[in-house]
Length: 570
Ligand code: PPS
Image (cartoon, rainbow, N blue to C red):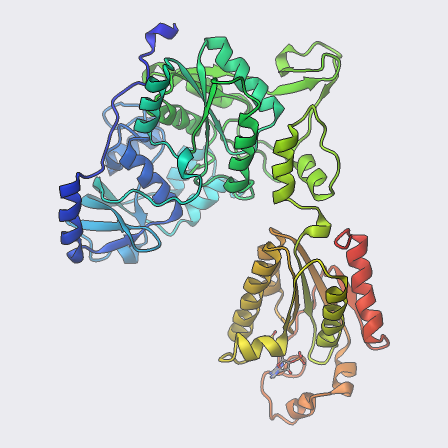
């Protein structure tokens, strides 16, 4: 069958303006209204302009949109499964009219393209989510993103590229569809199997991709997504370093690595069809579809959003129309007995197979535990260890909360000295008073201002934690919701330890070191926490300390013992 597939196939759309057109559009654009593109729109635009989304020549109009939602085809019956729309908030759409032109800009304000608006129409996000994801389950990341998207009004029409999107990382690995096609011709690669991924690759993937390409007698394109993937995935910088490491373990001359700036939707089977089409546009003849392709896994009850091989069934129905051959693949597992990988359906009954899940891998990285040789290559693991250091080298935020006079600043200052003595990590103290003097001097004590103050502290603490430092924060932070937001932000990048200094109001008031309680009681200070303003007690702090009968040294030791116990101190 292979000889039936035209090499590096199909017509390729190129929406980039010529040099002269570009100069003209730039001059004319002073009168154009502008749209600042979202992350997803930036990715979509890049693929539209370079033909990764061929045959599309712009953002979808209503008739194509309806047809795509309905049966994965454009209105003219061409296969196209994903609604590629330029959806903007109502307020942005006001003042725009059909027949006018708009400048599409990146976050730095550079005009990347011009859209000639042919149609302005309203999208139905609920219907769209249901059609694209086959679900309205709010835990599905794609469903949530669609329903929460502020873009309601769609602008469709002809797109003209003015400036290629700026990428400053791994530039040598970013091939456009035209680049890849001519590269394959130059190399003499007639058949090319593409492999899509959003994860670091290990031995199982290498075995699968080599087997798949060998099966059909093709070369191999490793085509990882570096645009937008599932929230929580390994960042693409780390992944690409891992791909570069694993590249050395492929047979020489078999594989090429190229990065794809795609914004994934996590739409499972429908997305698999889209991926296949995109790879055909990049000059590939074959496409591997494995287990749960482009699926977001399972919901919190453990129910998978898609069947493990559902994507294969759908791609099978469309592959002839698209003009690419699917190579369906089972999950690869390791047989200890045979010391080799094999597809799960080739495992003999009773044969023991080994595997390491993503969660287990992260646990081992976090705790600096062994990662077996049969699972991955040492250079890939070394890259992952650099990105996921063990707890003793991770950044930490110590977030104190409690009433004024509870002892937050005193303990925080003792800890500052202790950490400086221990050394190894940079330490920053973000005490309530310090922050109010330097970061939040214009803020008062209304609920709104307190929340803003805490979110600023959270932002700085997150930056420090991300970069491996220790942030000691000691505000009152009276509101649970804001504390939760800060936790959510920081916990993604390192340790977040909430320390509730639970010293009761009576003890704080008795101390009244700053004389503020007396003033508050006398009505001279308004909105004073505990007296005339609320304090919401933390329900699940990592540590709670009542300093009524503790010395600052004793209180600080409780925190240090906790950190030691959790592995944060070497
Ligand atoms: S908050 O609620 O987290 O934004 O407060 P924070 O930034 O920690 O500021 C608290 C310190 O400001 C002094 N102060 C007040 N506290 C509470 N309520 C009112 N109305 C108020 N006015 C001034 C007080 O000294 C707090 O310091 P600490 O270190 O907590 O005693």
